[in-house]
Image (tube, rainbow, N blue to C red):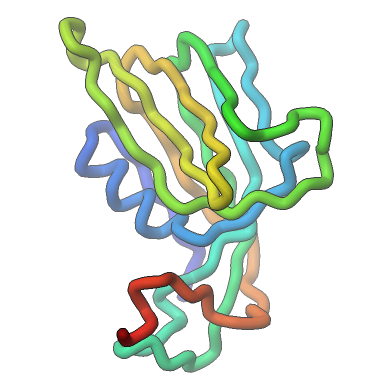
Length: 151
C-alpha cells in the first residue's frame, strides 16, 4: 500500500483517522504541544490494519511511521502519562471528540492510550492530519483486543 495521508475536519473524519491509528505506538518524548503555534504533533509507529486479511489472519502485517498533527489547539492536558519518561512507550487505543456544550465547533479531542493514559486537547475546531512518513516494515505481531477472543 502507498503512504496514507488523511485530513480530519469534523468528527466523522476524526473517526476514520482514529481507526487507522488504532494500536499505534510512540515514545512519550515523540509528542509535543507548541502553544505559540497552537499545534500538537506526534510521531507514531502505526499498525497498518490494511495488511491484515479479513478474519484477522495476517498476510504480511506491517507498521509504518506516521505523523499526527492537530492545529488550532487552545490548550493541552495530560493524564496518567509521565512527561519526564521520554522513552516510555504508549499504545494508542482511540482518538475521540467531545463537542463543547455551547461553542460549536470547539471541543476536546482526546488521545486515549492503553493503561489509562490520555492527552486531552482543547481545540477551536477539528483540524488534523495523519501522514505516513516512509516505507512499511514487517510487524512482529498483529495487535490483539479483548473482543477478538471468542468466549
